[in-house]
Length: 196
Image 1 (cartoon, rainbow, N blue to C red):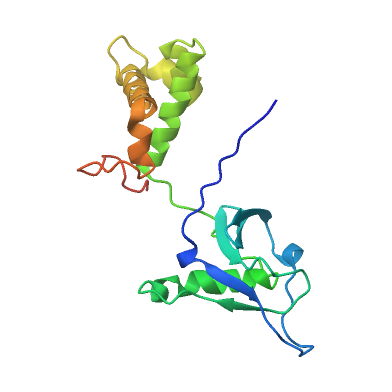
Image 2: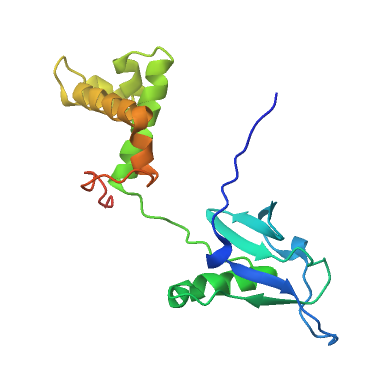
């Protein structure tokens, strides 16, 4: 079976550029692709290569010179843009990764109410498309005890399942574009406040 994995390349203007350097000094930094921690993907983008590194939940993108070879001396360059000050921490993490230092990963990320609703909505849609009843879906999402205690003909749990299904169908019918930031909606969607 063949699978397609699209690779979206953005402009290299905001990336750390790694270039071959002419250094005769033995102490010069040497490029070693395998020293960089994480899962690596290279893509050809014009004369340069785009390196994408996934390490845990973090993704780094670097621009590598097409003439950069393993073991050669290298130098890093950053684009001089008005956004440079806000990107310095990111560029520093990437420079450390080039030397083999894994970036610090925050152990816990805040879960927003919207993220939880998206998750439950998509799970409910999967269950509905597999032929599960609303009650079975509620049991899978909220547990048997919650269904026994709170499932009624016009109860809030039943209404919640219907709401989740409507939300998932809206996402399936183009709402995912707004969630991905491609389509801008006029107002902020409810439920984007952090769960406490």
